[in-house]
Image (cartoon, rainbow, N blue to C red; front, side, top):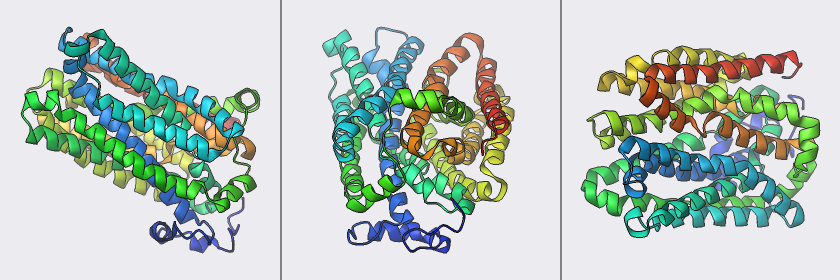
Amino acid sequence: MAGTTTYEGRTPSDYSPESIGSGARNINARDGHIAPGEIAVGVIIGRASEYFDFFVYAIASAVVFPAVFFPFEDRLTGTLHSFLIFSFAFIARPIGTVVFMAIQRRYSREVKLLLALFLMGFSTAGIAFVPTYERLGVTAILVLAALRIGQGIALGGSWDGLPSLLALNAPRNRRGFYAMLGQLGAPVGLMLATSLFAFLLYSLADQDFLEWGWRYPFYVAFAINVVALFARLRLVSTAEYARLLDERELEPTGVADLGHTQGRNVIIGALAALASYALFHMVTVFPLSWIELYSSRSVGDFLIVEVGGAALILVGVIASGFIADRFGRRNTLGTLAVLIGIFSLFVPMLMGGSETGQDIFVLVGCILLGLSYGQAAGIVTDNFETRYRYTGAALTSDLSWLAGAAFAPLVALGLSAHFGLHAVSLYLLSGGVGTLAALILNRALGKR
């Protein structure tokens, strides 16, 4: 795809950041062509909705579920149990991708997306209605686990191909910028979720929050899902969108065929994002559990710090696009992996120190996270042959989350509780090493 490629009569100069804003206004213009800005709007809306769900559950796993669903355990053990259930969604996510890809091949992408997002809405809203352990006993835990699995399956099924379509239609010299657009949903979702939980913690007595207040963010998540569903369907269901996907060969392929011909790219892609995805939970979910267990600090106060961290992630993601276009995505991701490795050495000093040190850990970590996460999704998926990119990008993302993020809160808290924060440093450092190894292997194989 040459840098001078035109797109439906547009030149690369038309792919300016300003087109992203105009895309929101033109998204309903069904008689016109779908511009990259419109695709970007769909990507950001969809991902922000998904990440809001994600962080609502993540925050509840650290500050609510240990007391509500595991009151028979001490606080540490209850939190570890809660984080184990948290990981179920990441385990189920690739299963959801495979199942819903089959649904798309059998029916249509609209049917697939509709079913997946309804399952997500049902699972998310259902969590708000799960009775506590005191009322339902172990059945409450089983229901919570089932709904969490439902969230993971739905997340895998909600892949709409928009990020791949956006990447394929981005000018070569602006690929870093367009790669980061799909990542903007994470800081937006984090900012909304942490702000909402902080508001509830400040507004309600502790007992009221644990009895019923924590359920409201899940209601909000359901409402946001409905809005996102219609916003995405109005784009995905158009004939123009279908034509663009067909032209780019962005259709589901069999997993066996993908594994046979593109398995190496899937594995390298999953490992290339390891540092970024491991850091993701190390600066968002793990600190909440640490503060709850080992600090007298108010969780509400710490959530305010995480709101600021989310803003820094947003700035970092945007900056990563311009940095990657200037220095190259592989160089950017490799440099950030080294910096994350260096940062990991300061975990004991910062998290185990004063409140100021804890704040520095979160805020500096969020800057590094934004810069690395902004490019983590695109560096290796470019390697896929076009007809494998739709399924390959989805499964690579699923496996990246599974390898780097699924068990990060569980492992980090378990290591810190039994071996101290130095063990957490080694865990995070291993993520940086994994990313560098994948990037070196990617270069050795002659990939971009």
